[in-house]
Image (cartoon, one colour):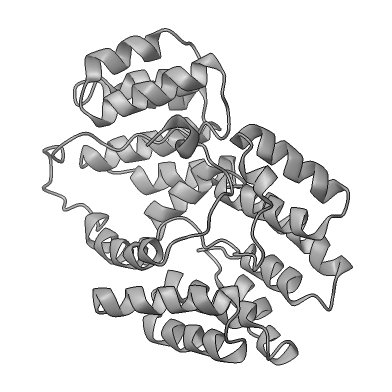
Length: 323
């Protein structure tokens, strides 16, 4: 994957294949993150995952850390360590600790956690290292990461680990209109800045896509505030209401989103966006049969719309994988 693709913010919508695969992944994660037997002492095979969020940063350190992570994931720990050692940030120090696996990783991360107990990057990776070491305390570390930075990708990743019955990450709102081509050509950081400006000016589509951009960056709470303001300003706009509801999705309390989204089926009975996103949230929650029903309704209530076609792609993928 190219650096531009890796840091893309809003271009494109979630593919049906990815969403359906996510459900399967969530089922697999239930076993993967099952309680560790008391007799387990040997580390798991391979390297523990490394989770460092750089957002849309394009500075030299961010470039080095992305390159180092690629090396780490390929198993070239020596080359990765050299890049991490060139920087002194907490992200770099966490990366360096992970390259010492399995000898010193847990000890080094525990020391960092003692010095920086409110650091989500430290706590999240400490939990991953503890999991791979078959030691206790992983879930406590993930909760600490989520509590320290609830409006961040670290909290989203911690949620993946704490709630493996859900699909990974969080469902995102899918606008019915495409991103303007001029915006789609911008780099991720410039695209985000432009969308923020459009949202500040009250531009409807710009606000919707700014909310999506924030969701893609793991900033679910920020997205909820932005889209919530749009919904308040446009009470009769089905997409604004749905976007605000989707941004309320929380694995610890999924009812927060469903309680807002469900009643919209009566307020906007002919809006495909309501049924489509209800299906999406159900799919994320593992409720495949009801998700399928809602996606079919999305096709029916507004046949020919972009979201009806998108619902068809999800349904086709569900048939393909036999779900």
